[in-house]
Length: 126
Image (cartoon, rainbow, N blue to C red):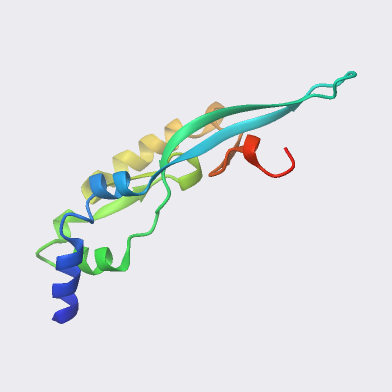
């Protein structure tokens, strides 16, 4: 029972999608590198920042908090991937949100692009 009380005290207000999305907000990058020949041999990075949430696994206290009859309806699920703009949603919205994310993040949107949590322009050696 003390584990449950600890989880409730730590998890109340800190395990919903809004809190997790704000607390673990970051920027991911959709990018591609283009090499231009000629005398310059120039490399150009086309980079687009993507808002994302880097934490894609619930903290332990949230797992305990959500895994109870009194708080189960507060459960959340992660949609997508951290490198491609993932985020948390309420569990009852998960299937629709994941289907939309899959449709939005496949095909031409992702074809020929790289995705990372670091800006490729700031990597060592570039």
